[in-house]
Image (cartoon, rainbow, N blue to C red):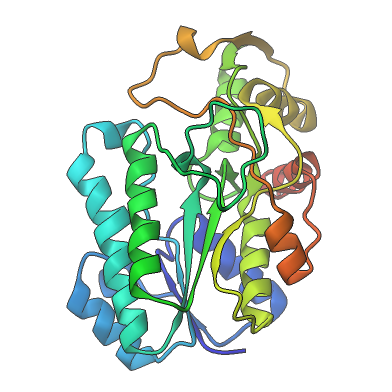
Amino acid sequence: MSKILVIGAGGQLGQCLKVVAERRGITEIVFPAEQDANILNESALNDLLAKEQPGFVINCAAYTAVDKAEDEVDLAKAINETGAAYLASACLANSATLIHVSTDFVFEGNEVKLLKENDEAKPINVYGLTKLDGEKAVTSILPTHFIIRTSWLYSEYANNFVKTMLKLGAERDELNIIADQVGTPTYAIDLANTIFEVIASSSTAYGIYHYSNEGVTSWFDFAKAIFDISETVVKVNPIPGSAYPTKATRPAFSVMDKTKIKETFNLEIPYWRDSLVDCIKQINK
């Protein structure tokens, strides 16, 4: 396998890539510290790639604070679009293939249908817009790219919905959770495994792919599953999104069609609840 360089190694997906690389015995992989791989420092990125000469670069660096992005537009744009462009240019100059992680939030999500890669992307918040602009930058600069859109990412690492629910469930007797936003949770360990499968395939079927776990759920049902599996006793009330207003509007239905990635890379994708069981076991360890 070619040498792999991970940008954004300290984040949730970066930590999962590290764990999965160890499990799979992948040794030709570099996880530089943030100061050595600052996505907003174009010359430093070029120097890093020139020094390491990776065959593949995985970009996990992103601005993901969906509500804060509504106020921090310039910062979100810098990291998600300009940073992606810098990295794509560095990959082009150093003959590397880029695996760039994107999001289901590039879609409006106002129709109940499985979203395909070539469906119209029409973001309804700043975060989604900056991630879409990052995709466009990568596509226009670098032919050798795989863009993987994912959704509702969680794991035993960093801050995410599962860990927040477990914390709140331990502190409170009752919680109100939104029931009218529907999507698919994705265990970041599963996504990490998929990224390594894409690399191992040596495929040149470049382009955009959708990946999440299998199945469909709401935030309310996701929370219920977290409490059921972890045997946490807490009353969970379903509420409409209108009862919990946020700065950023979110897609009501953002379930992605994963046929393309499954067929191209011969993948079997775990069901979301099965992966949630695995994650909670790891958290309890």
